[in-house]
Amino acid sequence: MRTGKAKIVKIGQTRLLLVPNSVTSRNKMVKSDRMDAILRTIRTDLRLSMNGAVAASMRQMGVNYRMNFGVDIARIKEISAKYEPGKELAEVLWNEEARELKILATMLCPPDEMTREAAHRWAGVITNQELREQACKNLFQVVPFADELVEQWSVHPGEAVRATGYWLLARLCITRAEALDRVESRKVLQHAVEDLKSDSLLLYQSALNALRFFGRTSEERAAWVMREVSPFNLSGNSREREMYEQLRYEFDLVD
Image (cartoon, rainbow, N blue to C red; front, side):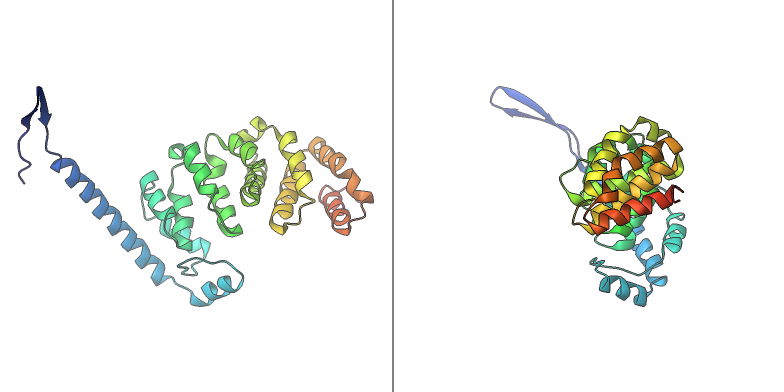
């Protein structure tokens, strides 16, 4: 294909060299066509594994997407293994309003290519617990700056982002990740203790989860958690007393 030749154009006393950009445009078109082909193949894989009953059940529970194939996580993971991970593909998948495509994005995004800006952007649009857990497990816990995400998200004004921060901290505890030692954990968990008093079910359960898994990592940390929640033992709020007892039981401190 002819791409034309460079031309010198005179504007007033200025001479400009104009280079045809058809090669760049063509490369962009090829890349776009390739991405569209991958998306079509992935959608075909998902349709072949579709479970309408599961999708309907999720909608009844308030998990709403423009498209939900009802494919289980194990099958989504099998599908992800067929495709080469890449940040560009992950971004395309994440921007689709389809449950399985967003989960696939967390599986196919190389952790070392995820930027802080993108992580904050992704966290800002997580609207349900399943996606929150998958994003933390598959991606956020293994990015090089996971500790920074925990610290920043745990003080975020948005409850959904704070909940993601607490779940990410729990994942770092579960995997005993090196990033856990870099987290200003006591500062983060003081916010978690405050959020135990929240009226938001999502937020206080996420905060409680973070405290549980943090306390599991050592007797010293368990003792610290119990000291922080000790006022709950005599609280006039029955839910606070129940959470106190749950943590005592979690750390084998029941008489």
